[in-house]
Amino acid sequence: MIDTLMVELSRWQFAITSLYHFIFVPLTLGISWIVFIMETMYVLSNKTVYKDMCLFWGKLFAINFAIGVATGITMEFEFGTNWSNYSHYVGDIFGAPLAIEALLAFFLESTMIGLMFAGWNRFGKKTHWVITFLTALGSNLSAMWILIANGWMQYPEFAQFSPEHMRMEMADFFGLVFSPVGQAKFTHVVCGGYLTAAMFVVSISAYFMLKGRDLVFAKRSMTIGLAFGFCAMGGAALTGDMSAVLVTEHQPEKLAAMEAEYETQEAPASWSLIAIPNEKELKNDFSIQVPALLGLIATHSFDQKVLGLKDIIDNNEKRIVDGIKAHVALQMLRSKNYTDEQKAQALEVFNQYKKDLGYGLLLVEHAKNPLSPTVDEIKAAARASVPSVWVNYFSFRIMIGLLSAIAVLMLGAAFYLWYKKDLLKRAWLLKLLMLAIPLPFIACEFGWVLAEMGRQPWAIQGILPTYLATSSLDVTDLMISIPFFVIVYTIFLIIEMRLMVKSVQKGPYGEEVVEAQEA
Image (cartoon, rainbow, N blue to C red; front, side, top):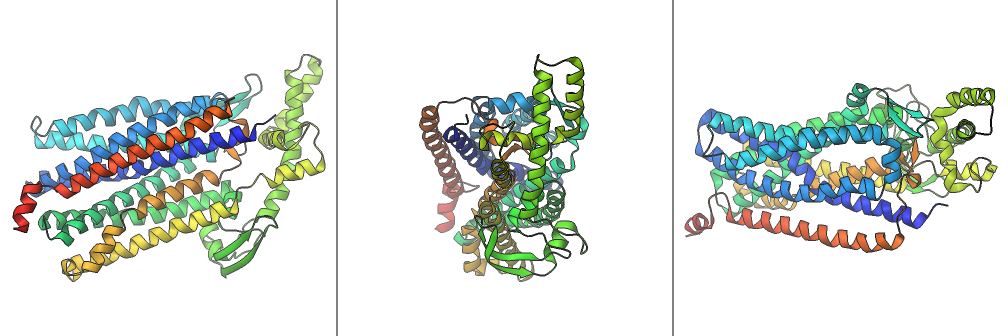
């Protein structure tokens, strides 16, 4: 029997942990490279202002890094405490990149960040520049290995199921590392992080400019932030487009959910500008369509159709039936009540249908006897095999809307800073830039929601249903620990924000200099 409350609470606990942790990750990924760029300018020009920029923005990077580590370590343990079945079933594959991340990337980043902050007066400029580069590289390599593991959850190739050991086992390590889905996910996430850090630098620089203080520092910081941000926007758009094509190919149900496509569209498919999904009746109560745009985005063509959720559900019914055959054959292989000849026949059947074994496992939640389900139980499992349209459709549009707003604000800042050269006179724009500081963080959070909820009901796409991936936890333990996690993580977030605000208010040159400027 599946304890649905325990499963839901486990999902909520991991989701809360992940979303809190991901508040800190994007800024770490991007600001480390921005500090490196500033230090490069210092090494090349020998101008003190660039060193001041490194020290100030580096301090904010260190605060964010420390809190990010504190929130991230918990997630590693939750794979054992909350998701032990998951860890057993796919640990042979999922554990490899996580182990490399801990032993290589995280240790590199953690070691170098100490040398980076303690080494300004102990190393030469070029040596310290290399240390800063290695710090930034370590933070991004850490993300790469984690996102390779997560990419495999979306596209679980390069592994095979072992009937003997009853788990997935690695078949091609280098295929896993260079998986197109994993690499696309990594590049898209880091570009989002770069844009977050760029907006962070631009917003705080706008604060200094609005206050009329540290103007040389602020203008040069904003210049680097804007240039870095435009590169990040281009990268995010390119990798987002690449991800859309890969989702169309490997996760058509996610694409259909994030575009509220219930009916299969013949080429060229139109794109839903805005819709009101009706998940119960599998239709949209209201929709405004842009002709041919979805076909271009999802397939890069005007001659390929885009599958709708109704056809995907129908296809999954057949996959569930085939999954039952694989499941029955697997039971025969593991039983001692059959002859060698019968087991040989069972192995032949299993190999024929093993690609759909995961779909057969969906019936554990929906059928009284998963090996002999009714037609209605198969239909119920197929209906539950696709993700929520409401969550994915609006998560995607909120993410895109926020990124569009950021692009407009940054273009406005660049226009008045570089072309008109009178940004200081545009108080309204400086205020908008300040207020926009949370926008990329929110966009990244919704992007993560889209990535994870678009895979549901799977922990591993098509392989392991989420409700079979959990541990045997007591509901009471979860109900106590979830509020505790929320309280502790909220305290961490408040601490970070207070430290950040105090550092920004103090400024790059200290409160005494601010008082002298105001006088």
